[in-house]
Image 1 (cartoon, one colour):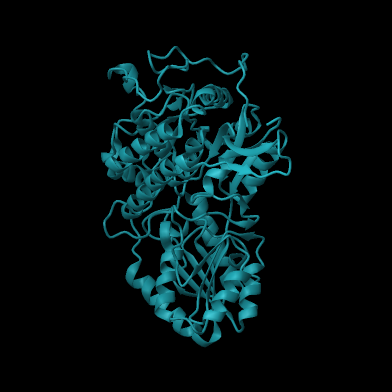
Image 2 (image 1 turned 120 degrees about the horizontal axis):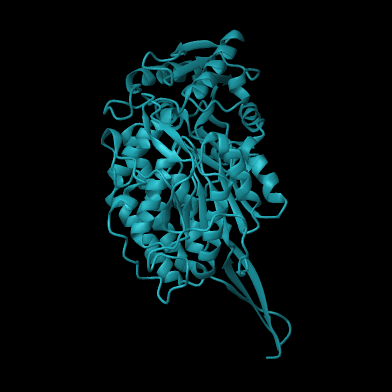
Amino acid sequence: MATCLRLPTCGAPRLPPASPGRGLCPRADWSVPAARPAPGRAWLRGYAGGPGGLSAALLRTDGFVGGRWLPASATFPVHDPASGANLGMVADCGVSEARAAVRAAYEAFCRWKGVSAKERSSLLRKWYDLMIRNKDDLAKIITAENGKPLKEAQGEILYSAFFLEWFSEEARRIYGDIISVPAKDKRALVLKQPVGVAAIITPWNFPSAMITRKVGAALAAGCTVVVKPAEDTPFSALALAELANQAGIPPGVYNVVPCSRKKAKEVGEALCTDPLVSKVSFTGSTATGKILLHHAADSVKRVSMELGGHAAFIVFDSANVDHAVAGAMASKFRNSGQTCVCSNRFLVQRGIHDSFVKKFAEAMKAHLHVGNGFEERTTQGPLINEKAVEKVEKHVSDAVSKGATIVTGGKRHQLGKNFFEPTLLSNVTRDMLCSHEETFGPLAPVIKFDTEEEAVAIANAADVGLAGYFYSQDPAQIWRVAEQLEVGMVGVNEGLISTVECPFGGVKQSGLGREGSKYGIDEYLELKYVCLGGL
């Protein structure tokens, strides 16, 4: 647990004096939101201007530190992955801005931890209400900067908001314990206290939900946060800052430092090594997670890591093939295959293999439509950038060169450089790249197997273990396989498993800790044992 001290200068720039009621100095009552400065040139300088019908009120471009919009000396462009259009120039925060944000978060923590659970709950609920009120505009921002279909973006905003609602309720359920001890003149109790400042580093594929899943738990526990969003999708994090400000979240409790890909490494290192940061939470690749773990280890920080996946989707002979195909469609092609729990390998038992492949191909051709995310018919938007497309191309090319058959798709889509056709491969073998690397794109490789033992062995051969799926109507087999799969989450006859009420996380190199559910708040709490003697 962080201990609050008087801070000497740390080399970070001092924030300009805040307007009354919005500064870093303690206030007698933090529950009453201070009046916002009247709109004017200074207040509006952080708006991007609302290109393409996006809300100018939510499209911010500056960093958000200590309750203030903080410009940086440089900016970087954010592009629409569908068209390549420049959505706006965002503050390119560096190490000095990151340190200023940590300092603001630390000073705010010294007061926020003392705010009652009821009050923290109320503020999170107000933030949730504002997200629901602005859900359509928030969804448009996601589609613009991420590319996912608008319907999916709308679903993400609801999912994102539900984390704030959930943790607003969990804030009032942080209970300690009384422990019976042998000595009659002693009593023992356990307190749960917030760890301190949390550095939150989030990915581009769910630019809103991956923030609220972490931040909701942190703020409910009494922690403060510094968010470093992905360079491809900073607008969602900044829109959340605007709504947090409107909700009355006190200055310094929620801070955002966007930065370019060029500065991401140094900013990430600064956040993970700053002595005022007590907790690091990261969602992203396993390779990057290992680097951040190394930085955090030097000062023994608490960490949560939700890293890469390589989910197997197993279809046994006993399965209902039509249900399995529907589950495969939902699990594989959400966000064009760019989710960490997407099925990456389809293992189909020999007896129903041909039927499954035929029906899967038919479903893909009938129901998947590639296009701009703002077009109503679109189910498959662009990939986030051309590098992502190149990886899918590489996996397809490698598989075909080793004997795989393209059933449908297999190449870039004519719409543009970031679009790829939904692709189904058969005759896939375990030596192909797509069998042992996460693709993160619209590629479905099918591997034929004979026995249950073989399928489980193939599924467990990966060094990661985030999610796994299987379809079976044999009750005994369901229990066996669910217990044997080396993953943190299992979908049985179900392709969509994420929900705020259940713990999200993996095993092996897929990460550490759990997010969401009643367990998620524990990642931001320390246990303190207190022994009372002389009674």
